[in-house]
Length: 146
Image (cartoon, rainbow, N blue to C red; front, side, top):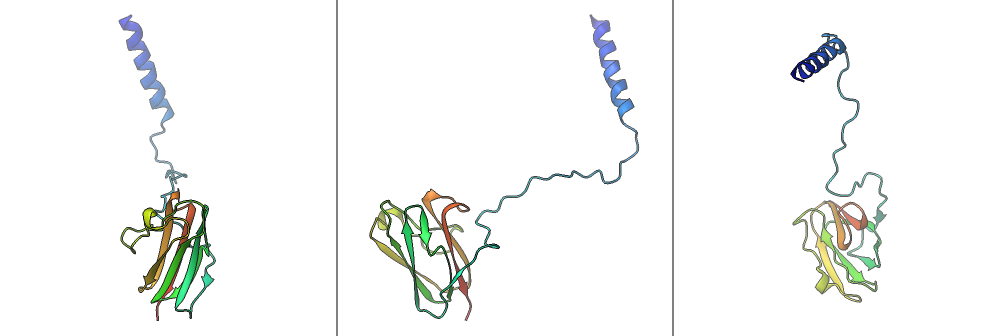
């Protein structure tokens, strides 16, 4: 039995040596790589509703969606979120600390909350009850500098 194991191991080694040419192959880098997932929604293909020039803007939280989902405002604009849905919702920044969230207990159906966006940038937000940072009930405020 020991002779069979030794013979099998020798055959395996010989087969592996025969398969390798010893020469490096040109372009031997992997052709597939695992894509790195973004932490938040990709805004490169999003069309923003232009609400610049206004002092205030409104976004409705309906059942499983925000209306207007993607808005563009000037720095210093106050955005009011109103829960027009039948369910509880919240408005949570995809980037921790980007702005103060509107928590579920403060955002029952029929209630509103406002956030003033002072600094230019893209502020992605989502409802933790009906989505993730990248899909589902998600939206964004693009704030333009003065």
